[in-house]
Image (cartoon, rainbow, N blue to C red):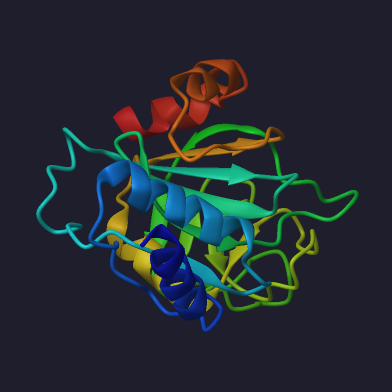
Length: 201
């Protein structure tokens, strides 16, 4: 049964479609999402969060974790992985900063102030100096000027699932199928406190 569920998830994932969670216990569904995430081709994603509208965002907050070595973005609801995507982060000399960031600003259609007015659909700003999550070219390796480029359909779904203040962790660690609270604590020392304070004004 788990093999069939994984095959169904992976088949949909390779086409970049969103898929519902399988009819299994939460642990099995989460493991299947993590397995599918590990096999993602560039510009592909898996999304298995059928209760997105029914879940209390306070009791089960959304957290996004971007693993630089894995070139993956993972979405957790509470501690459970519900989605994952291939990403393209900053190339050498334009590195994506590591740390814990609140989403500072969201714009469905945004253009870069730094790079020739380049389109940045479903932009979610992490720093005031230009680092953001957004839809963009996703070759499967670091290729951006510091932003985190996402598959377009995934960027749209993520835009709908987050809000200003949602936590995004960018880490140089490998990531597991459940959100590790220590990851937030470990990376929190590198958080930009000025940005956090700006949300409270």
